[in-house]
Image (cartoon, rainbow, N blue to C red; front, side, top):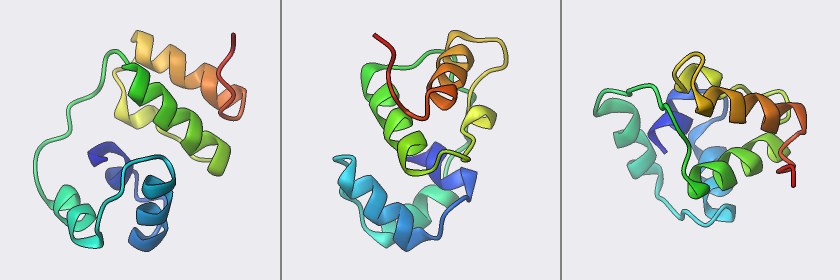
Length: 92
């Protein structure tokens, strides 16, 4: 969630609705706190939950970009590029 809130691509209410549809129900206050707190460290690898979230993100927002949230040249960066190119469809 911290990564999604820091991307600042959507208003808080839209992000709250989206996260709820992805299985992560959160409040507007939780989103606001996520923006304010903690340092965001670039992600090097994605968990299955991360992949499901990124796939849902790209299906809902094909022009969105999560790449600033991952370490450059990492397996996570490669996975996000593939997901973005496939518009959120996870390749078999």
